[in-house]
Length: 399
Image (cartoon, rainbow, N blue to C red; front, side):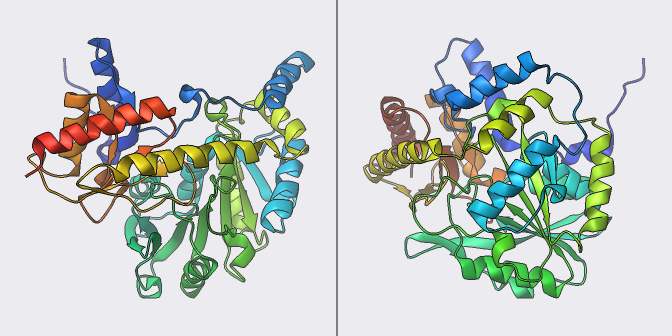
């Protein structure tokens, strides 16, 4: 029988975060203990959505919210999201400017599908959450990267981004707070990126999923400082609401007039997948209007785990780490080379020999080859064991 081959474009699909997890699962089936520091999901480490949100979900199911919602999302949730963005981030939008999605990942896919033509350029940070480059390439776009680099104990914009935009630039992506480094961009840096997009008649896509998990620095939403640049903002309920498996995100359009045709195209695309899950939408609509007071306690716990992880890494020779200012990721640098080869070899060897799953920097389109990303979500004893294993691996193989 003739072999059936997939479409060539599928060869472009790589997602290092989950590919590491596939090998981790294989090792666990063999009876190995694996410490997962690769996936940004707080729930397996004991975190759970707020009690009022869980109760609201059960209430939504019992009330009968088990039907298809409108493709753009429940109107009551869109109203609550718009109110939240106005109150928290000073983004002047209404409910009609919001589309609810199945997580931010779907929002990224919808935006790329609606905007990217063959040969269009997409300007991305390096390092970068990999899904952006993946979808850009999948739809015929060309990823181009502006660099983030360590400067005086923080991550800063390292390139004159204005020189990177061309007449073919279609999107400028801002990830702030930043995954994988945990950086919080300064207002002037955000404005520079927005103005670079404006100079090329490009759209800014601003991923702000970690906006409430900032430890140091001041987060400013791109749409609040972008002046005349059109912004599609992305956010959701996975991270600060600890509802990763609920798959509930959203996008908004600011100013909506300039993006009316894009919003219409994305709405039509959204109809093809029917709708986001309705019960979580109803639950989020009920609880979001009550405010997000629970986030303060969560942020403080994340800060404690971040500080503990920093202390652990300080005791390891051959590792350097710039303090992450937000989210729950750290992005250490290897200060020695070893017989592991490149960063991918380091991550694979560490997993196979020591049972610690991290993601190599190349998986985030880093322009260097000496970084890896970890999450500092586990409890202190698990983090201590993980760092001990990492140190042991480096000592064994460094040269």
